[in-house]
Amino acid sequence: MMLYRKGVYDETNLLIIGNGFDKAHGLPTGYGDFLDELDIDTKFYKYLNTMSKKELEKYKCLKRGSLLKYLKKTNNRNGWIDFENEIKNIIIAVSEFPNVLIKKTNYNKEIEYSLQSGIEVNIAPFLLYVLDYREYYFPYNGYGDWKDEDILQFYSIVHDEIKALINLFKKYIAWIEMNHMDNLKEINLFNNMLITNILTFNYTDTYRTVYDLSIYNEIEENGVCWVHGRVFDDGSGDIVMGSGSDYYDRKYENFLDLFKFYQKYKYRTDTSYLDWIKDDQKFDNIYIFGHSLDPTDADILKSFLKSQSNIKIFYRTDSEKYHFEKNLLVILGKEMFMEKLSGKHPNIEFIKFENE
Image (cartoon, rainbow, N blue to C red; front, top):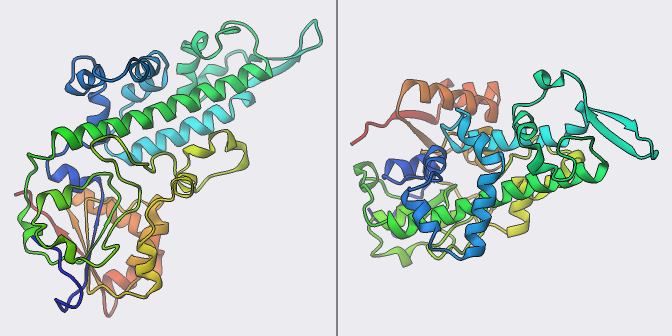
């Protein structure tokens, strides 16, 4: 397949891709894949052992805490949205931890906090893990009462654990770039599809690796947009990965740099897709493959979904289609959903993708 320049061909077609695109091409980029590779004796673990002692110690420190143990034990590992939801739940739970404590004054007239009796049954699951590993998070008062500085230190440790996990994922993607890009599957669907622009939510360069790039330089400038950043095989590059922003409040400011809206600002991630919208560039066709249409990406997707382009959304199973429909309803609202899927001139179509 080739990417075609506007002006050479009459059509302008946009391909929007998410992690399902990489997985369909044989890459182990799923949330569950990543967690599984963090076990001892995996190929990725052996790769980590070739890193500097400083980097390896960061990983070992992450293993000692409860965050990774908690994420590996939970069953919500179907997609990266599950990771985002877990991070959201952890940020909320940790930020509201003082609310499950009893405030009191000790004999030195200092403010201290202790856990309410029997409260364990009512607190967030992650905090139960924290209490099991309290000597790690509260090294000086693990089994006693806590002071304000202990709680602030607790915030800091959890924050640093999440940051370390995200940085570890960057190394995982770099490892994939080095070791998996030569054996990618080719999907006939994309060999028969003219594409002029790509909007990718992935961190890899899978599309351009698999398909014919002999005239890649013919693409218009900014023809490919890595909206969440890109990771290169040397590990360089900044990525957007963390919690959605729909619930952000100042009480979560200790975790500000874990919110995706702030990461986009901080890393100045690719926003060339805004030019496509601003310039009122009309795509004849918009193809969506491997993206769940989750509402956390509505700020990017909505303008394209509202357009008059012919929109084709690929799905694998009926349950996946139903999931996409529910997400689409949230993004568009009931009236526009009905208009675009079953109105007088519907322009959104679901197409079942059969594995080849």
